[in-house]
Image 1 (tube, one colour):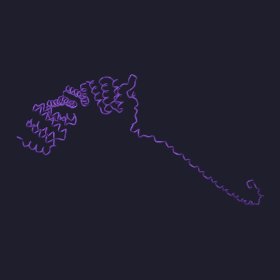
Image 2: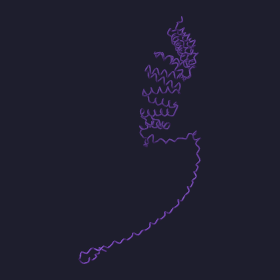
Image 3: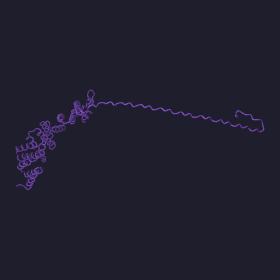
Image 4: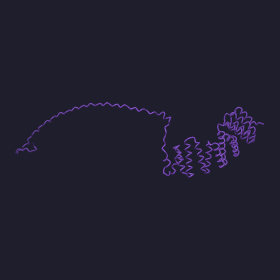
Length: 331
């Protein structure tokens, strides 16, 4: 007999068929009653009506998980997984849908089983690779099984050599295990997949660091540092390592050996750069205007002779003696 809760959910879903939360609640209600046949039959019907491809893929993948786990029906499970793949935008989205379909489970063996089933069900190598990386993540994070995790990441890289995440995750575990030769190999693969010059240079600089610090090969490190700096002269890791590397037999440091960068002109810019004609500015001689010389008038001051005034001669009075004789001072 249908419960009132399920009846209400079905009624609400009929009015709002795009509401994903209602489908999730309906799935949970039927699953709580262990009604796996109804789940596997009905949930995909509602999922197919969704315009949200990612949500549809997740619901279909979860129905596949219910089919395999609850009904032991591998054929239906595989068909639902392949349908989920067609509703995903790409392999990464499909892997995410499968993971999301079982992420609420804390039974990591069950999760691994669902991921392995999905990997087996799909044919696309890129989808398989992402599912295997997810398996490696469960081994690494939840089961603390580094050996199985490394094996998963290696297999993912073999399935899809363009899956950079597989190389990155594997490289980190190889480094933790001290397998530096494998680290160099995986770094090389990552570098080939890097999208821009700065990312490439940084990965090459990491190879140089491993060669110098862990493999004891400064000559190989010098080559890699020079390669990184040629790609990106501003690569901080390469510049820092170059300061630590010893000079070569000739006493030349890495930075000294590098050619001076030659910056090529931008063709698009060069097309617009037209040399401007040089126009000589006319030289206009300033007219020379002679200032008139005005002779200052010479004014001769009149010479006025001072009048000579003769001092009167006063005879010295006689006191009855002989007449006074004029001396020289009297003249």
